[in-house]
Length: 197
Image 1 (tube, one colour):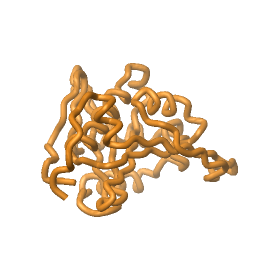
Image 2 (image 1 turned 45 degrees about the vertical axis):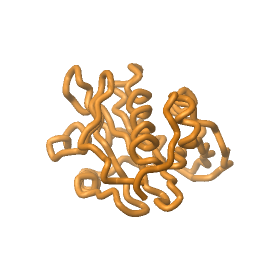
Image 3 (image 1 turned 120 degrees about the vertical axis):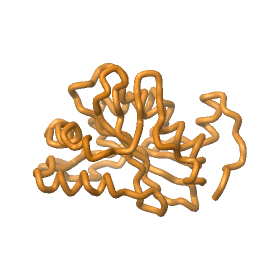
Image 4 (image 1 turned 30 degrees about the vertical axis):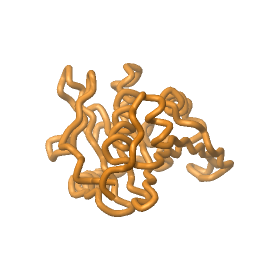
């Protein structure tokens, strides 16, 4: 896995993915303060102070060792405004294993932006960083995310019954995953040895 291959930004047909900057704070706070967004994150929205601390950690983040997270702001190119974020957590660098995820402002839902952005984060993970395996964990009741991951070709590998408790309710968890070799076949990409290490 060669982290030096990371670029400063990535473009898709309608989106720009780039690191967060201080000027993103208001748009970031707009969706991170919503209870409907945090419902599937299994926590209450952060307080104003917690949100400022959370955003500062995003700005200061590194992506070098296990537990580090690459978090990219997703910008709609037609209006140049922040609509959400995608991420890869470096779970185990030596095994090439990472966890992917996303958070989007519901105000911009229903346009396929999350699918487009997550497809790009998979491409970055497999084609640029050469992860061996990427996986996602989600609330089993989150039908929108289930459909998104299945559209992207991930397979459901586990159904963890009553894995979490939120607001006095037990929550089931799904785990979806995809291997680099499978990604390459699905996207007609030549599968070779990982670059770097």
